[in-house]
Length: 189
Image 1 (cartoon, one colour):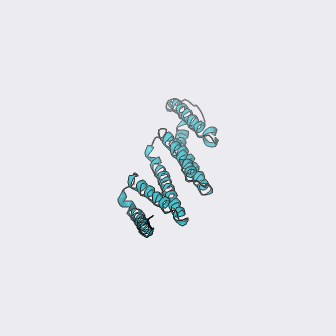
Image 2 (cartoon, rainbow, N blue to C red):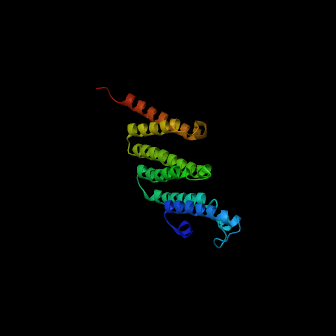
Image 3 (cartoon, helix red, strand yellow):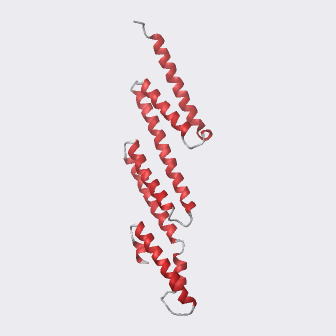
């Protein structure tokens, strides 16, 4: 019980939890027959610990997610931000099989996926804005196309992202117009 309650290692907590519950079930047979075993009674301890496995996993992953989200603003590159969140997402998917109620992780997984999506999109848009600021119109156009492709081919319904899509399409049209205007003004030689 001490390892289940106090260990910092989730795998140890889970294995000790399984061992504890297995032993409590074995002792419960004796309790039913009126044979004294341990104090407090196995049935009481079982009630105290039933369902705790899911809580251990959810608490661990929520804590890991919080730590990762606190590190994200301190990281400069989009790739390293996404990598930190992907590690938590992979852990969540690994531990999902160890839960009694697997759907309890769905909300956390969705939050991680949404955060990764937002970081990726912001990365494309920031790169496009930087290139545009530096006067690198072709590079800016390429980055806006990357962002548009990303939005149109992700798993999120395009109707939910219509505002972003239309903003990016407008920016692409504006940059294309500038490119055409510049090509017309350029002397032939």
